[in-house]
Length: 126
Image 1 (cartoon, rainbow, N blue to C red):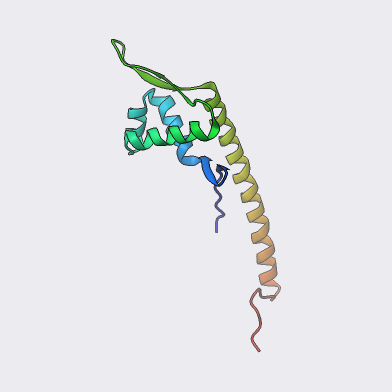
Image 2: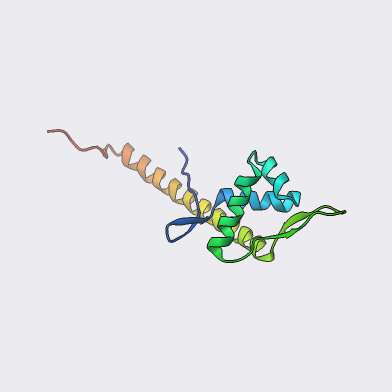
């Protein structure tokens, strides 16, 4: 048995940042292109662009520095704020996963002990 958990940030009940948005930002940093990042994640450019716009609108700050094409071509890279957001999100996610794993092990040990003592968690029928 395994415990699963997810971490995301919301503002006024709307998703601001989570695993999917983290993946697209990481892919943009890797490929230096929104189009190539989207392709690497099997999503359309338009979908990736909407993710970026949502993050920026809900956080109120730029996540991507964009340069227009030309002789050397354009590109995109993360702002320092976006890099910091990803780093802190990843750290928080690791902490939550470690905590959930530890608590799950404690739960399973207590459950096993309860089971072996003959106690049932089911209600007795009359």
